[in-house]
Every structure is written in C-alpha cells, then in structure tokens.
Amino acid sequence: MSIGMLVADIDLEARRIECRDCMDSLIRIPDPSMAEDTFFVHGITPEQVAAAPAPEEVCRKFLTLHSNHSFTFAGAWNHKFDRYFVDKLFKQTGVRQPGLSWIEMQPKPYAKLDHYADSIQCEKIRALPGHNALNDCFRALGVYATMGGLEMDVSKVSARWL
Image 1 (cartoon, rainbow, N blue to C red):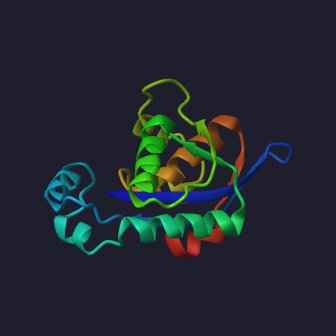
Image 2: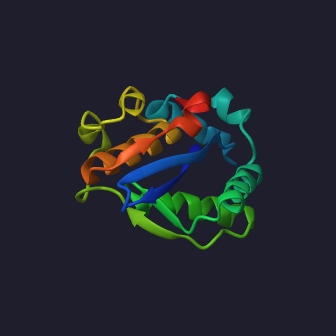
C-alpha cells in the first residue's frame, strides 16, 4: 500500500496553483500475505512492502506535513476511495487524524484519471507515469488546473519529485 500527498495553495483570483510540499510513502501492511495483490495494481513488490515504514510512522509524516502547512482541505480524484483508506490508516494506528474537508476532483462520477491526463498543461506533470500515489496527486491537480484555466507552479517541489 502507498500514500501520496501534495500540498498546494490555490489562488482563484490570480488563477494560480502553487505546489508547496509533498510526501510519498509505501506503508507496511499488517498482513504480508496481501502484499502480492499490490504488485498487480501498483507494481509494488512484497519485499518493498516488508521494508516500508510502519503505519504509525506514515501517520506521523502526514501529521508533520499538516502541521507545517496548516491545510484544512484534502482533494482527491475519487475522494470517497482515498478518504476510506486514510481513515482506515489512522483508525488502525490509533493516531488522531486531523479534521479535513474532502473535495472531489473528478469532473464527473467514475471518470478515469488516465482519460484526462493528456490534457494537462504542465509538461513535467503530463510526463509522469500513472498508478503511483504521489504521481496521481500531481496528475489530479494538473487536470484540475487545466480544466479551471489555472497556471500551475511546481518549482518548489520539482527538484525533489519531478
């Protein structure tokens, strides 16, 4: 299992999105027998899952990013799906989850991110492969920016991730 998160400021008046920070982490799952399933969807091997940070550590990374940037909204391409797994992660660890308002980023129900990815204006994001937690965060925000006519600045995170 993996989690990706992209922190961005959206200024609708200036028609601009500025990506400020991000995190990407595999998560060691409690039942290693399920690790093989992740390979077929995400290409994550059982060995990578076994060496991944424990769920508690991943929750702490999430909380550190939240504390550093004080965000109150979480956007996701299919927010019900992503929120379910974030809620489950925090619940299984007993770590207190920050209260976030979740925003759906799909332009219509059941829309496939790959279908919209070619429309992304930001070249660095359009070149990213899909089905990676952080890349999908960049791609979803890139589609949101393109559909909203917003300029997207990835300079603060591009040296590390793009």
